[in-house]
Image 1 (cartoon, helix red, strand yellow):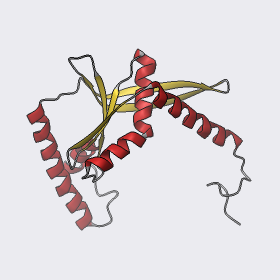
Image 2 (cartoon, rainbow, N blue to C red):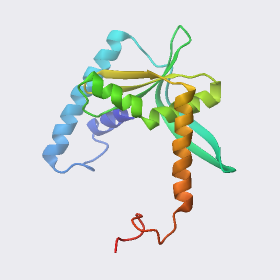
Image 3 (cartoon, rainbow, N blue to C red):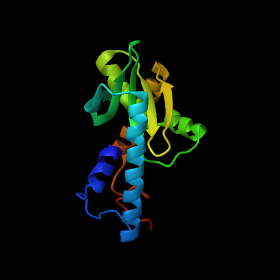
Image 4 (tube, one colour):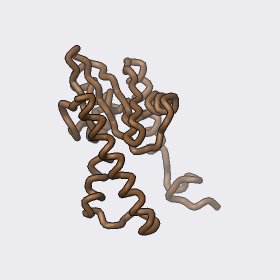
Length: 178
C-alpha cells in the first residue's frame, strides 16, 4: 500500500530509486511525511479503524472451460456495525475534487475485482471505495450483480485477446511496427 511505501521511503530504506533527481526525492519525501501525518490525524479524528489490512484475496473464474485466477491484497476492509462491509483502496493520486474521485471509483476495475473476490467468498456485495490520501477525499460506491457481470465480461475479453494473439500480430508489444 502507498502509505507503507511512504513509511519505507521516509525511514531511508528505499534508497533513491524512482526519483529523477535528489531534489525530486527530497520533495517527495517531505510531501510523503506531510501526507502521512495528515492521514494519521484524520484517522484519529474519525476513529475509523479497519478490521483487516493487506489481506490477500483471490478470484476464481472459468472462461471457455479454462480456470483463471486473479490474486491480490485488499488495502483495508471495514466491518461496520450495520453489517455493511467496505473495501477501501488507498490512492496517492492528487485528486482534489469529489466529482473526479467519484468518476475514478465508478470506473475502477480494481474495485470491481475486489468486490468480485469478496462476493465469491461471502455471497454478499460490499461497498468499495477509493481514499485519496493527499486530499482526504473518499469516493464510495455500492456494488451490484451488474458490476460483477460487466467485470467478468471485461476479463473474458482480455483472456480471449491474449489467447488469440500470435507472435506475428501487428502492433503487439512483441513485434515492431513495419
